[in-house]
Image 1: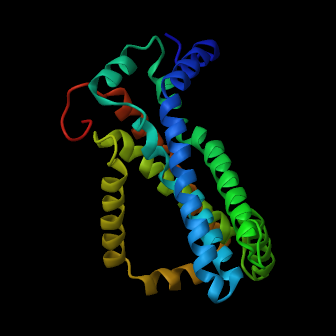
Image 2: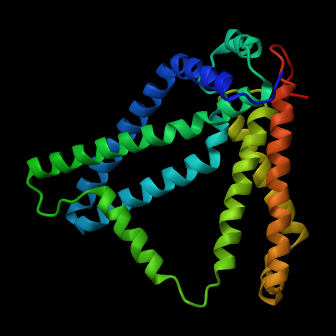
Length: 262
């Protein structure tokens, strides 16, 4: 069997979207309800102090939600699957393991436009409610997010090298790949992100003990552009390795197994 066939993958995608429709709708409504609560709560609580501060807090919540969704997104790989029957169905589907893995991985990407719809709906609702209540300062959270990001872009010091931001984004992608690995390493469907986070924290503590922060800052300041390129290349190799291991563990999945897929 070919590892990837576009027509076969299209059929798999249609089947997955049909069966996971309930999960996607439920996730969107949950995010909508949570955002409505936070938006209305903070725009009213901060009203006695500085009204704009409430929207800044909402802006922080939205940006944090988007970043966390990207980093932890692969952990949602099996959230739409319920019990052993769904795992059996997944194993029996007429598609290659690579196609199944891509479809499972893409489940978090499909949540992003739904979260955007929930964000816009919650934002419109808080705007209407605050207008009806008669508040003097009423605006959209999304416009606050755009303004904050544009100001942050303007406030970035000129002496901050672009290599730093490239390294930062690569670090985020590296964490993203770790959660993809954890999603197929740990068998728990709902809480693999918790176990992966614990492992990351333990590794961070171990790294801080073996390589103190002062030494890291000193070496970072003394590093050259070539050193940074080499470090980023090594990190990129780790990202590729994590996804490769995640795929291999996905291929080893069994309906009945132990705590981890080994």
